[in-house]
Length: 176
Length: 463
Image (tube, rainbow over all chains, first blue to last red; front, side):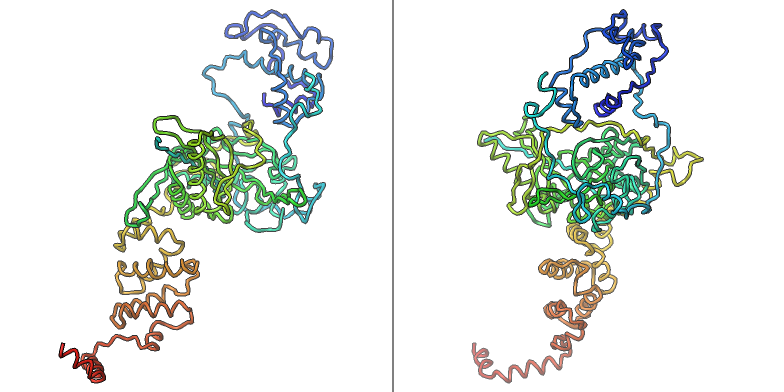
């Protein structure tokens, strides 16, 4: 999952609808799954009572085998730099962890020889617009959004202010 | 000490010449009040979506065809993420995975040893051409520690032309870019004026010893003219060689060219290697182009781009124009090279040829030696020439009819440069520059001279 969409997903706190819904144990994938043979041994069994994560319990049989990949502090720090998010506390990090594990179920599918689909729009026609000037001239409206302006220019800090290094930030990750 | 092989690759961004932007309907114009040419999409306000401009696609196809590329009938759009104040969306829509054109070539000519008479043709491979958005403009106000952002340029269509590192020095890089500029201007796909930021060049430079792998490369930015491009590349090659010969190492960094000092300096604000997190642009389906064979029968004409149709309507490229000039007028290849290199000069030449009986082979001398050198001396463009093609043709006609001598013609030209509105004939009469053809008149004059110098004549006769 892309980090940016991942984090948006985290913030929303919603669980995306899964293609696997309704598939309860009878595995379509048993023949070609890398992870065949896993038994319902669930790390998530403890969560079945927790309503936020109850959707996970349906899919416990489809988790990849083996211990979950621990997200290193470096990776989390890198993500914080790239997407300018703040994982804030261990709950945030755990949610990220679960999201990754949830997404890893996709690895079970054998996609040999299958053309990747990168957009649900792939069969649509890309509409081509005529080269006419139809927009613009709304400086006043646009500048209404600006906290600060100078003579119709937006004002920004001088260049990018790099996110301070891990040691210098007030972030939960420091303690990890 | 083993010889060094410099390797130069170029990344060129050409602003597409169109009325409106790549994905929105706001206007494309160079100088305009700040933030007046900005639509809601350009400002990245929520709820807006990109809508592709047909003209921009056609411009990219034309350019790809002119550079001998394969046009990808299916190309894709991607997002390239990075943070900067002039990129309001936080990403640029570009074509990273499958660009619109790939695997082309560009041929250009160089003079050996600065002698126009020895020209050699070289080729540089074009890796790809992709469509992408331009960013806005940042004006840095260091005194108040702030940046002012103008989004007028944000979203303007760009063609990125990526060249393989087939060049080895500043002269080659400059010649290649000049030829590309002429091609773009001939096609009309970009006006390619570097001074107005319509053509931007970044150079990738590295050096290595023969037989060894390529060295670490640096990227040189902030090159504002073709002349500076040659200087920047040559400086960087020298800098790298000196650094390595002194036992140092080259950092994989971005450097800016300082035109005042004539050197490259490391750019500030560089946060190490960027991770752009490329992802498919979710709001745009693949771009499908057609040719005559694959043209669908029932589609709306306006929604279809036919590569063959565009190919048939490509104008003459500079190389073709040069050949035609040589063939039609019997001038030398290096002459036609200079004619095309100067904006408007070829048209001026042809106009003079039409209006005079003098042979083109002789006219070209007057154009290149007299007219052009004068223009260069006074930093004038052909359009600004005080001597019009009409006046020059008039003068050359007098010369051709043997009414004046060649020396006299040059004198008249000097007078014409003043732009006082006199015709060549008027100047000839004023300065009594007419050639005399009457035998009797000539004898009379000679006799008068001899009569007036009796002593000298006697001396000469006596030996």
